[in-house]
Length: 323
Image 1 (spheres, rainbow, N blue to C red):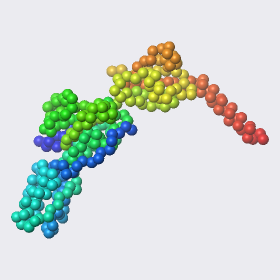
Image 2: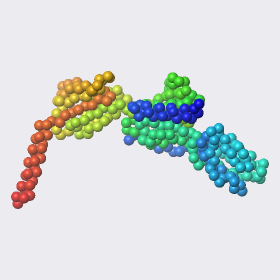
Image 3: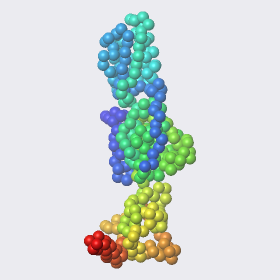
């Protein structure tokens, strides 16, 4: 039977795969969690030192899967569920049987018990350690911030044993093992609703899907992919504006929208007259997710420009060599 942690890792792997299949703006950098509030757990590694007891402190000590550690003179001690200070006090009490006024220090050398996974459209996806109390913004900052192609929702998944999500209308996953909630990306970045910046708990999974895109190629100044954000469509004029307008040799009257239709083996071509649209004489059609707007170059204009370039080159040569 798989452990709870193994099941969580399987969930992370599944969500990561979904995010990569379709499932720089950044958030403020994290200020760092308060380690004093950090609750120890399995896989945390501790450095424990006791004045006058050389046997303790020689090697780091890892908290076992049940939350226990073992020390010379002390034996087994429950560390899981305690803060560093609480563990130090517990060790002092145990050592008082053999030592007078024992001087004990405890520090964390490696955090391992509070993993949170961040997958999808972030700059550094992976498993990160909370290291104390951290908000959603701080955890996304740990993951390097959102990529420019981040989608319009941030999804948080939490194991039911960790409690529900303090978000509007969280839903229970079909298997009943996870709560799932969403935060709108633009509202989150604009701090429209500060309550969306919830505290993240160990074993939460944060998924940032990639946004829907439209593409503009051909005789435009800045061909590329453009994010739809929360809009389901983008007009041709809006897409051209994002592409910084037509290039020097366009044939806008012969433009095409290349659109993928469900079940179709290839994209459908939709003729559009961008010249008439720009003049206000034709409807400004809506582009859907994954549409490609193609503005072809004018071969006549390109030939004229090549002739002009050749003439300028020849004239420059005469001016230089004809003196």
